[in-house]
Length: 297
Image (cartoon, rainbow, N blue to C red; front, side, top):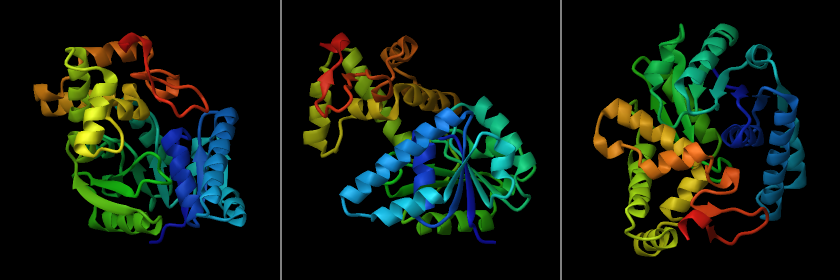
């Protein structure tokens, strides 16, 4: 089996990035979401990101045109996945939502199609159990921003076949990515290590050990991190961080994964980071200056 046609369900930050890299590397892409308005916004984002690559002389104008021409948008999930060789689910990090999407994927995608999820923490085995083809269900955890980040964390569930894993590994390489195979445990590798660090950084702020800028400065200058953990949390989305920590806390039962009360309160109040304009920092369109949120000044 070879993969030529790829369907991506969800056109948000991760979904449009995944569509971008597949289309740029010659795949026929179906991008699926709930409305034409949302899909139009996603296509505009892809076009802007391609323009950035042109500016950096990574691609040409003709590359941009051919990439965009390979993407077809759909609001009907069944139609969008009816002839796919690979389906990538890139919806909200919530098991109940993913469960419903995978049931549709299983019913409407060809029997030979591989069903994958971009989940950053939810059990592949648990998701696969909602389908009649658990051997063809796998995790493809892309990193944000997808066009720039090289890693694809490939997670095999309990029943994922060697054939499925091998094909997904090779497909990831064809995207100029570096796939790394890991086993199916809460948080996998990336977030099992990253999220406790972010959570501990929030506890450090919550307990008054240091301020936002001071915490990020220590980690950037002292540990050679390109971005401080609080800024990174804003970039990931504080709601996403909270969801991942809850999955790990529930799945592993260790109190070290217990989300900081400050994180819980910020998410409840709608301070989700860069996507809402404010988290630990305030974000002004067009500005590259980092300004600490008023609540922490």
